[in-house]
Amino acid sequence: TSFGEEEVSKFLLYSIDKKAQPQQDILRLNKQFKEAVVEICKNYNLTLLFDHFDQIQSNLDRSFYQLLRDCKNLAKYKFSAVFATRRNLQELLDEQIVRDFWDFFVENQVYLKIYDDKATDFLFNQIEDVFDKNLNPDQKKAIIKLTGGHAKLTKIIAELSLRDDISINQDLLLKNQEVRAALFEIWLFLTSEEQNELYLLSQKMPHEQIGKTESLIDFNLIDKNHKFTIPVFENFVKEVGQNIESQKISYNQATREITKGGNDISELLSPQEFRMLKFLIENTDRIVERDELISTVWPQTQINDAISNEAIDQMVFRLRKKIENEPGRPKYLQTVKGRGFKFTS
Image (tube, rainbow, N blue to C red; front, side, top):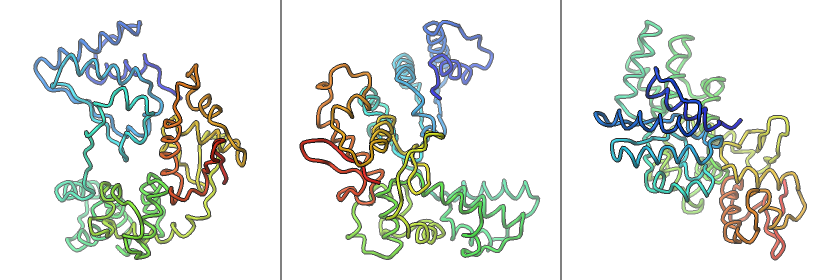
């Protein structure tokens, strides 16, 4: 469900002024929010943090970013917005949004390390306070060795150790439902290309034969020597990656999700990419011409010539990186020279 412009503006206003009485007219409401931002920024720096932004960005339209830009122009360097995501946001947004608000995204990415010793110590202290029990130094060391300091995995395994007295054993923990859910969460927000690269690395293939791994290094899932930073994740990848070649891509009409191998990959796709892939899946094994794709992916475009062949090819290129194990040798999304594209699952 899309978030209406009025609902978004009210949410932003309440975020900085819980006692605000929102105007009913959207223009006055936006003006009210911008005036509140300017007032705060007279004495303070204001930063809006949008957590888990990748899970909601597809429901926001252009007006959201325009409102933030207006605030930035009014308050200058005393106002900023931070979007917390699991991937580079430029990969998830429609190209038009990235193009119109490029100054928000281009070269403004900060990749956080999986392990931070102070944050991990604080996490351990919090968990110990909740359970009123302490982990001994050897237990903490064993947990960090398995998880690489990944916050969610560290939390889950520490809680299992204190609550259920589960041994910190990799084989045993890989069978635990909570641990597997956390590992799947990491796995599912990787593109098919990245999943394939990780699987090949888990099989000790020379990294020179695998392809590009820059994003995996940026995400800190592997280090510069191409070693896994989360040991328990490496063994998980060995297991789930065995079926990577036989996974089917389909669209679930009931849930409105695109799945690969039964796993939802919708959040990996920008709204434009989702529309393109959904249409191609619905026309499996049929050659889809470029004009058909334009009217589906860019429904507001009045003149098909306004969308260049390069724009379509770039969209297909981005889509292949997300769904194909080897984008250079596509299995699902084929180009039919001179005619269009064909999807095969």
